[in-house]
Amino acid sequence: MFVRDCMTNNPITITPDTPIFQALEIMARRKVRHLPVVQGTRLTGLVTERGLLQVSPSPATTLSMHELNYVLAKVTVREALVKDPISVPPDLPIEEAAKIMREHKIGSLLVVDDGTLAGIVTQTDMVEALARLFGLGKAGTRLVIDTKDRIGVLADITQFFKERGINIISVVCMRRDEERFHLVFRLSLGDAGPLVSEIENMGFSVVSVS
Image (cartoon, rainbow, N blue to C red; front, side, top):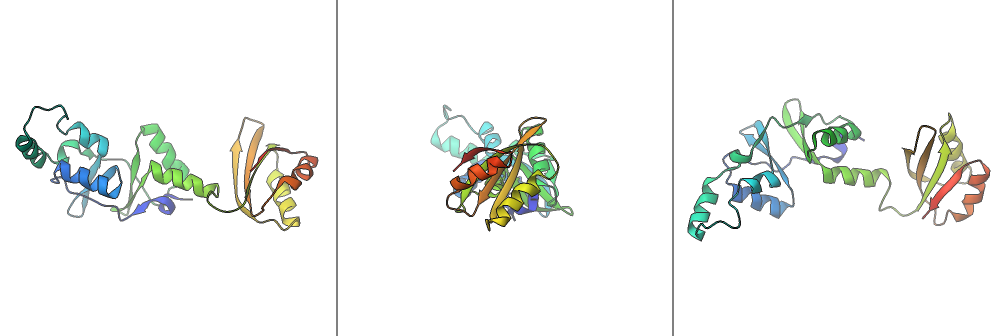
């Protein structure tokens, strides 16, 4: 799976001169926390909900409502602009994008294709991608198998399912330590319970069936 498979295409954008209150209103209405900032066709930066709130007047301000509205109308997102935000190409694997977000402790990445803003990928998009990888939301049974790391182990188990006419909706490999890992299968099967003993007779350990 690549960034292009989970990013938000053609994201909502604002300009550096957009008033902060308007940017926050857009975020609330569209249920987003990050907005790319453009000047004409040129990408100039990114603003986050947290950044906008930090430069907004405090709720404990002594300003009158008239004064507060005046300040809010004058302060623009330029004051909270993240210049030169980290961007990635759409063909970057999502695990690489997740690594960049984790290392830099950021909640989103702008997706740039040939110098043009193509989209934005956020932590929420990453969670949704993870759910898709695990086949969540699809009917079937989740089966977790613990196995030793060896050549051909995945082929052995998938052949087992093939011989019984069981379709594999998704499979994810999760390393536990240097020698063992978990295979997480989602199967188009109502009840995988009867298969447990057969699988364990093959030398594997079934961790859970749900």
